[in-house]
Length: 240
Image (cartoon, rainbow, N blue to C red; front, side, top):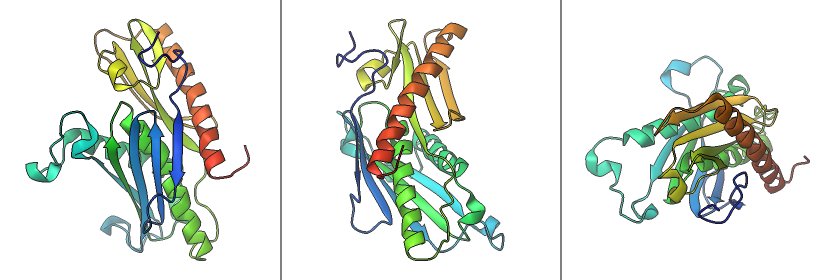
């Protein structure tokens, strides 16, 4: 029996609230169980220096965990005068994931800034950030289309992410913190609706992951991601 009495292949309740904030072009509150992340998308009518004159747009992300997100206060990065290594890794992952499903040449020379702020952490903050940011990005693109700044949607594929791991020698999906903290191995999977992988991050913490276990974790993650994508589509009021 899992910590919260779920089956091994059962994800937590996923809730997505669109238009959560007034000013961004796209904003959502996404909840994976007790993990809560605010994801926003803001359009800026310019691109980084290396893309000027290319006709291509850019999507970039920043990730932050607020001091009250954990049981013990997390120090703000600004007080250390440098970005936390974990935060830097996650925001690069979010940006890569969103760019991989978007035709940047159709975005025009503009940047979409994605900001992910974890307001409550209970495991899986990076996969929740990716999943929520996709909705925020979709809404920002819709804003550009409605404003007649874009003729077509440059997003090619639906995409989501989930965590999986091995706890007490059992493969499990969507680990909460109590499970993740004692996981023998853990993995984060980002995938499109077509079942194509965007990124896989896998680590054997206490021992290596066997080939059989890897196959189980990948199948478990695929099934979970397909469920999450259906939730995204329901929120966006799109047909399955």
